[in-house]
Image (cartoon, rainbow, N blue to C red; front, side, top):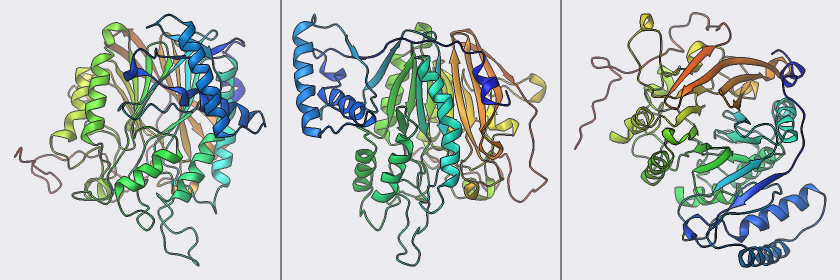
Length: 462
């Protein structure tokens, strides 16, 4: 579709109630806690123009939690009226993030709409492109909200510009600072839907303000209301959005700009996909700043490949290939979105399917997963002049991947349609012709290291 009206036309109007389900207090490992209600009340009051203090929110939450827990059968999930909830903060002894559960009464239990933003690199001096891009996206999300289907925004990290934004006053890099994350939180909150964010290779770059990665990471999570670097959100029936964030910068063994998913997150992710099998109807969409090796997406050889920061855990030995191994083993992983390269969405290898025609090469073994590259919103951060974001639109038969073209007034283009043939197999179709860059063999290449070339590294298992 070339316009918002063309996109919105097939959707039927509807209205109804939307709820958020909270786990039983009898199961502390899954308990969200009273902070959820406090956050809901605070956010609802803020959006309605009322003043609502944190103390009042906590007090009200405690009363609600006490009344609900005493009036419902033990061990059963209870349902409360849904306010606008950005995040749930579990108690200190809960290591994994809560899963936000949406029950919808209209639009279909399998339907959802998710907008995905690539590397933002916000600069407070240059916000026009961001506000324009937001204006392109908000009507799409509002339409989903009006139909009461699961709706969310996901940012793929690299939130701030990696340079001084006040060069006459300071040399301090903007990326990773408190000021950067506060600006990003304000911007992401302004889309009027719940947002999720994961850390990229620049999001712990506040080296003048924070002396350790741990201190920088704490500020990142606190400002964005995240209980952990990763996230999991139930967006539709048996459909999860899952994000993994980079947690290393100063303490990196090789390059600070390697996107590193720590062992705790990786174990959490493996446990999650094991416990949500495709055979039971689960579908998982993953979001990381960089893609995993084996995804087949277009990469930058002269920048990220040779510098060891192209793929997730690029220099991590066994953990480098762990991601694609999980994809191959667990068919519940249906999609994987990443950014990092600042490349547009007009190339065929900006989306890769689980299988390819035999005449194009050997079977790639990408499980049931479609890998998706996401571009950038601001012109000054693009490597190929593209200014684009992604839209993920789910339905009972599968899902569509669309491009929101910010350089052309927010026009929508259907890029690929994926249809589930059964719980372990999909059929993907590219929906448009793909542009290629002008011939430039010294800049952008599709590349995977192989034995015998100078970029191949053999990792000793010891």
